[in-house]
Length: 146
Image (cartoon, rainbow, N blue to C red; front, side, top):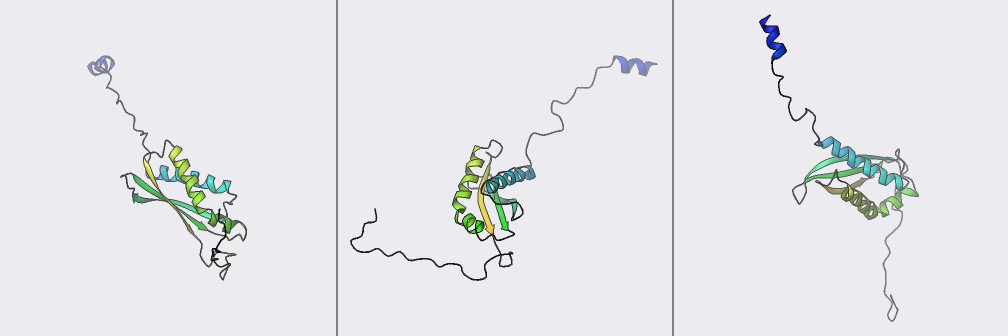
């Protein structure tokens, strides 16, 4: 009887102020968020999900000491129209991704290393020989370049 009375009139144990859940993001959460941003950027450039494989990995520590992440895009299928345009616009794609990352509150404590593209010779539809040569620009004397 005494133990029952003690339980009824005992003080409740204090509850911890913090729950077992954490609001911190773990590495896979950050990688998934980068993956979503990069996937959306490629989708806007009309790149279909079945023509590329995108992976995001932690690549070390950035210049400011923040965790650094890099994106890897592997071409699974070579589209003779879309793929050269995609490769020609790599700086634009990189700038768009960096802009989205800079605007993200979630990613403000990370560093984006860049996008790495890979296309192998075994990629279906890939050219087997050089498809164009670089041109040399020759300045004509007396010509105007303005």
